[in-house]
Length: 119
Length: 107
Image (cartoon, rainbow over all chains, first blue to last red):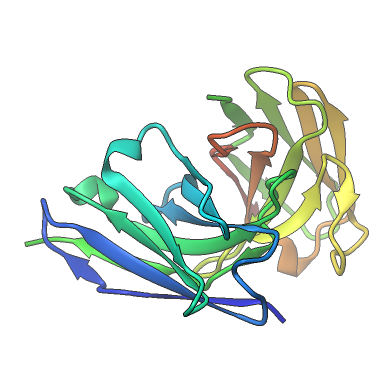
């Protein structure tokens, strides 16, 4: 059973960098799928942020690309998100996800973690 | 980017009703569309992918149709556990994009 679990600070100050990690269990992160991040501001819809293949190939949302870094650590079977220069607009529930490379349907989601941006 | 427009954004219905939600893409995406259900405080759950393929374990009262730019999600007989928000997502190209959501509430 594939499981994804987000971790990281729940509170980030404006202008600082948001850092989240997703621990994957039940599947090797270096095999055959993309691993990504999707966020949802409170009461709003879903926004895809970025995805990374186990080998390191990446895709970024152009609207966030200048501030986002996604990386994978195969030794720990986890992947990470860094979002720099955060503002109140970055406050959201952040989900880590898994999707296939060809048909990007999200079949596995983490439970989500709320990140608040406030001084 | 491919824009997805869902309608309606809000729907009030009764148990047993037949409900249809529409998702329109800003350009043709063949059958590369998925539907998700989200309940408050929970991650979205995949219902349908490739426009009409039911995900394993999803009740058969859910069905999807469409190709190109126009898609529908139908719940044939609304059940109490179906009251939730539904999102479409295009699977065709990056950036991955979602519709704005349709909230289905109890009448």
